[in-house]
Image (cartoon, rainbow, N blue to C red; front, side):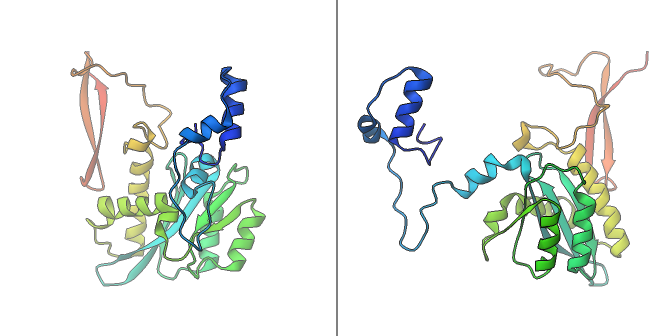
Length: 249
């Protein structure tokens, strides 16, 4: 219990044992066996609830955003905005522009966040694009803005990891010819990421399962009788999505 709940003390654990499990244990005995917490360096907050714990507890209400860059064949720099849901890992917006502004960024976020959303928090860094006016507009949308500490990409780790996946699986393999070409590439990859790419952190699963897809049950080492494996190319064959198809009678 102490490891699973870092903010719990011996009294809380003793009460939990007594009320929920019927075990009467002295708080002094519990304190004796509680794991020793590492010493906190001077000048740093104790942090009863770790940042990772906060993210886990509120994952369903968190979205995160960040920018990365791509270079065209003519050496123009394009800025790519990534917006994702924490709980499902679903990409809710992926777009590019030559001139990123707070007005453009706000419009992208408005398109990504529905009016009946259930999100509570939005995470972004200290980039100048995320201006005070933009944050005020997000607050009016019902979101609490959380700005990550400077030089701390791990504070927005899921979005940073997604950007790494975007680079490794898409941008590192394709040289966009123009802004329009990059947008088409991003649209194709976003659909693959949300509906065709397995994610280990989801079970494995996909962030946005297709409603018409059949539920596939594991069949050991054999393909189900009467079916064959089919492959659908993504991004001109850079990736493939696989599935089962019934054999013609």
